[in-house]
Amino acid sequence: MNKIIINKVYRDNNKLCCDIEAGGVTKTLYAEVQEEFAPYLTDDRADGFFVICVFKCIKEHWELESKVPVSTRLYYQVQNYMMNVYCEAYNIEPFNIKAPTIDSELNSEGGVGTGITCGVDSLYTIACHCNIGGSECLPQYSLTHLVLMNIGSHDIGAEETNTLFANRVKLAQDFCNEFGFKFVKIDTNFRTFLPYDYTEYHGIANGSTILLLEKLFRVYYSSSSYKISEFKLNRYDVSQFELFNLAVLSTNNTTFYTTGGDVSRYNKVKKLVEWTPSYNYLNVCNSYSHNCSERECVKCCRTIIELDALNALDKYKSVFDIEKYEAHKNEYLAEFYARKVLRNDHYAIEMWDDLMKKYTIPFNYKVKALVHFVLSRLRIYNFKQIRTLLKLSH
Ligand SMILES: [Zn+2]
Image (cartoon, rainbow, N blue to C red; front, side, top):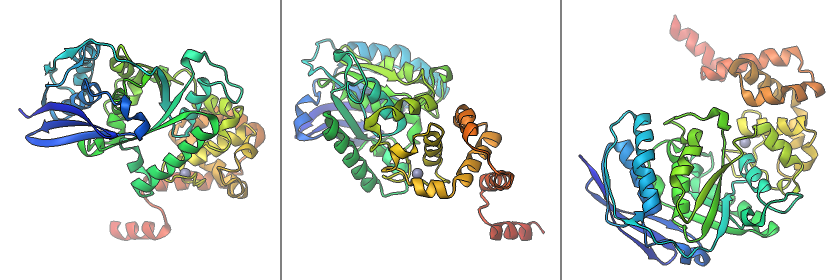
């Protein structure tokens, strides 16, 4: 059976490195931060790297041995809870993990952090844990640091990965400068080690990456994209059981919380339209670093319509192309109508009453959108393709 051996964890300037042998190949995993945060890179234990390697071993059916100590609490939680639950999800037998443990508490900076992508979930979490824009939060739980990490999510856009990450860094940095948060940028090479669908590992890799800065963060909020009522063991999207993952990852130094799982997406947007810091920063597009505002872009289209249903379009005119939307409004609304009818899209359903108080979608637009939706699911995008298919079937 192949094996991963964690040999060494060490600091190399602004990088925290981990030398491993994986399946007979020697490799160095690393996470790099800005110089000011380098002293917080936690090199006396393997915690974050350890969890990433456990996940890799579960995926590949490998064994794991760490020569670097792991926090006792984390080791216990991984061996006794994560192992059983993930092995059930992957339908494999639990296996033993060898690692020395360490109990000493770290000298923590006591930071409170969360990720900043400027999407709805992320801004909602920030709005709930700060004292700006009319929000109120206990000082011990108010955010001090906002984090943008590169562990794979920027690989799924239409823009070139490095450009997309650089542009998102700028947006996050601007937000932090304007509203007085410290900005932490974490660049990693984990993507090369985890060549899987991003949704399969991001929930576990996000938290693991934060553990590499265990000396910095006392509290870290993860923004939930699922409601807690949708909690489900799902190997294809680990964020669906995030509550479990964050309990496994919490150590005596860093406590993780999931935020937003008790609120629907539409209610998050409702909070944001009353929270002024979101007006110039809301950024939901998966494909580009700006909001493309295209009808075909599910995230942009959905968000513009939500803002319209809440009479808040004007507030976001610097981040969405409102003119384009106004000029083609029936097409956008009909697109959503098709998603509601044919996909039972719960995002469309929860805002539908508010939307229909304002608009009536013309019948011909509805029919066109339904036909377009069905054809696009069959991967037919124009009439030339239909003609070709008809010819082939003769
Ligand atoms: Zn878009």
